[in-house]
Image (cartoon, rainbow, N blue to C red; front, side):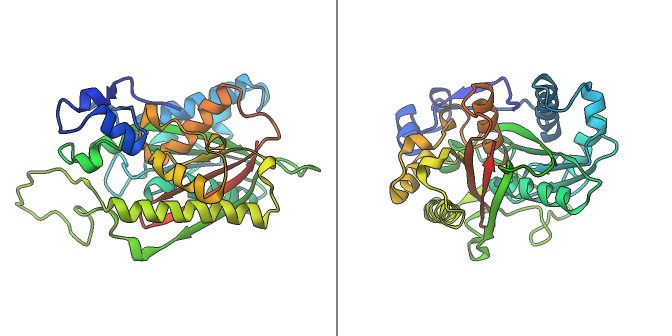
Length: 332
């Protein structure tokens, strides 16, 4: 994972808008967020997370005796999930990471479905590795600088978001008696909710016009209640479906790692599923909603703290603009 060094607490935010630490915590579970400086772009944070990922793989002895530069050359694919690309439309941010990492043998692509991007990216990378015997390794990065597309005068949204990146390394290995890795993925979408979470300006539907004077930067617009209801519904249904279809009991699970959007969403889903809240890992208090980055940031924290052990069964689950949703069943 990689997050900016600048940490903005609720109390600091309350100096600029009408809110308070108590209000933000009680409504979202958020206590702080990390905000990138003006010279940092998505590829910078994504690259930092990627380098840490390769270094950790070498440190843990997972890839043999390789230097980071040698390991980068073995990558067959780089997938970046982000809604805040370095450049509008193209080039892909994944290409910028590929260049800086020296992974010249890797194909590169972006996935841009907001907070669901990492879950979709994980399955996309896994499927592409499986589809070609010559592909063996993929790097999947989730990175967003939501501070760049946030209206900092809108109390309903600006309290929610932070900047960050997380990455994972996938490797195709021989089949084992007890399968590991990504065992099952559910992906879904409900396009009828396309307007509930949206960036309205700048696309082909509503482009910038020559000579137009722009007084405000493009910013996230959200129907909070509609997104909340959707999120609770799909998180609940996705977890239940994975457990039922894969014949998994609650005792089989080590952890559920949800997208860190709002602690109240996770608590509501846990209540509906009758699953103890303690089974859900939450770090939203420190990082707020980092969109595509929230799940891999959580995985890195858990991994480095020794809370994920080889053979542990976990579920990652999330939702995002579109509206989209998904979940991965993973044996660590």
